[in-house]
Image 1 (cartoon, one colour):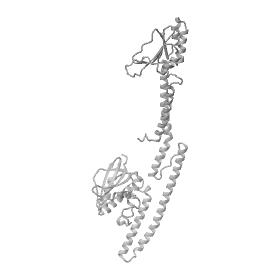
Image 2 (cartoon, helix red, strand yellow):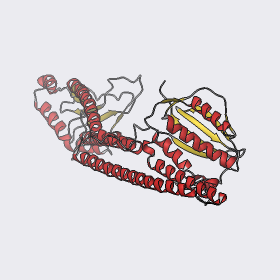
Image 3 (cartoon, rainbow, N blue to C red):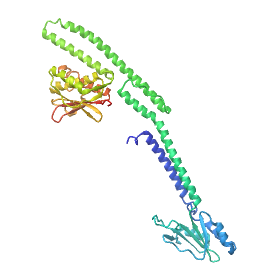
Image 4 (spheres, rainbow, N blue to C red):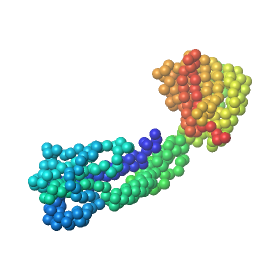
Length: 443
């Protein structure tokens, strides 16, 4: 997905992943057993603390021991006196002597008899919610049993619940703030990419506004300067070609007049034909240099009506041109540019294939003009050459055998200037097809 692959989403994922890793490390550090035989959060007292509690109860008056035990009760550890060791409930197990925890409590409690039982993991929905989790039972000097049992701390649970809710709200707020900040930071990058695409289609595109971090502002400034230099070079090239074409037309006009004084009719016709071809070549070269401005501003055009008029004119000239029936298609393209593209494609089809079959349809939001011939087609490894400036399969530059190789290049340039494209392919039944894809006009 494009959203998942954007720069802002990548930065957001990196920051969120780092935050999650930090929180995980903090949680592990809080839940990790304390060094020196400590126990985890909300479990039994340390062995030394348990021994101190037992000694304090034994030092009290036997009649006051129940009150002392009640005073030692906390929200975390529940204490009570019993006459016998408690029996293990279903789902619990006793800690054996070989267990390291048993040995630590045995060392602290001395010769006193004691037992430790803990609840096994049981996640069944029907499991009792208040089953003992960890319980230490120690026999006192009078034979009674002091039972110390871990129990959930209601105050701590409420505090943790409120803390968890607060952390969730803070995390959500941070996520939204982070996404907005990242998007605001990366928006100039998206604007730069859009400006580069616009400049590829429109030479007179506006400069990129200088905003965002310093590095992005410098990048936008460098792009604007580069765009100005490229536009200047293109304008200089166009002016140079226009000046050359103007001067050459002056000399061609003189040569045309002088050719009329050639006495040999055959030589005079050849000279006039050569001069006409030179003039046409100059016109094609100048048009190719001005493709970005050729055809005028784009407008909504009825392509089928234009093709019907064009086919009628071609038939009057004796060309074998047909238009397949279909519905009208309206595209956003200058009329002069569309006529030039259609005429160039028809010229190629008639010249190399003897006829031209025109088709018009819509496909994926595009108007598609197809011009197919019945000629021999083009070898597959040569298709990529067609459409390049001054590139043609026949090596000569004689216009009778194909011209200078600018026809398809002009079509491709005009199509791309309107946001379209030119596609060439061989038909299965023989012949070459050229398709011009143009943006449809808004309904």
